[in-house]
Image 1: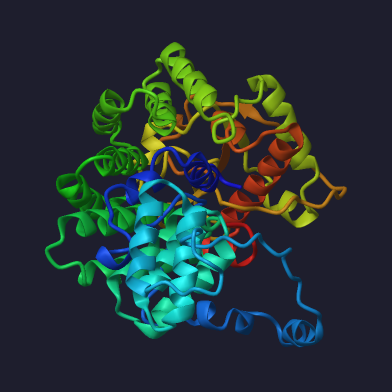
Image 2 (image 1 turned 180 degrees about the horizontal axis):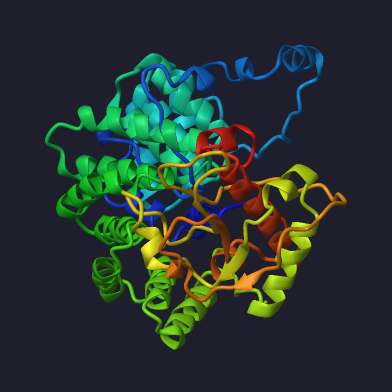
Length: 468
């Protein structure tokens, strides 16, 4: 997992920053729009992007679909009966408007299970009720039943493809709840943009869908494009949504190496929410870039204390130990990769140098795990810089000549000419791993990714090979 993918997961796992803000102040039930709810992250779709939602089995190989057709279904254990109005007999049907109003009350009381009971009763009595299915999807998302929530959102969009509430729910599901991937971020982005077109003059909805659009663009590595929707979200947001939008704007600025501006936005968030773990963690990243390591470590420690699952303490691996791990990973690379690295130094540094980040437009992310600097093999004109991937496979252990030794490089920018070199960044890699084994795998995958750039592959090709 790359640092970016890990941070997206942490954003979802924390649940203390974004999901509640997206929920806050949004009426639910027949009195207004259904509201999103806490859960894990990912991204958007478009008019034609619901195919995988409507018929997810079409994405499976033919033989797997055949196996699914004959395999007995796996059923969840039955749940205890809960009625929307538990003082009424089971055989009594309540009026649908009353059920939807009661669902709204349960949402306000943070009782998602109660809201789900009301929404399910309403949907059974009025199968075409968009409001009932909105509430059902929102309750399922809040309860963490994400597969059921995706089916519920799909059902609403099948009945009302242009319904802005359903599009907003779908965007939130893919951006902030499902496990992160580039495809899901793209689906969430398209849903958010479709919802934006139908938001009209509703400031709260414009703010929410703009925030979702900006989040999806950050997840897709397009922070420069995220600035506009996130600035719009900050300008139009009220209440709890404002610090969430401000935080995401700070992330976009940080990704663009605009560190002073990012710090200003983070200070605004922390002034309102001093115990915001995500803002504290990113403040640590900004302080780290400024060389204020004591203050940075204090911010990281506080974030870890507040949200240990999202921000575990950094592994204790010294620069020397890290270099040794990289040496071992080089020795285990496939023969072809080792041959490509002939006369190409592999270096380590704590963090990417600013000169390397801003050498491209838009800049490279400060959280890259590795970088290839120079020209691909066989090319003699035009610089190429490669960034590390989100996921890489561990190289096979093979015999063969190991490339030249590793040199610790405190400042990779010392190379003024685009001489070929691969750099791995210790602190960024440490942040992606919770165990020594995970760190070794991350190093191996990053090396394979950068060797791919050395051989002339672009990020799309590497992603297709599982080395995103």
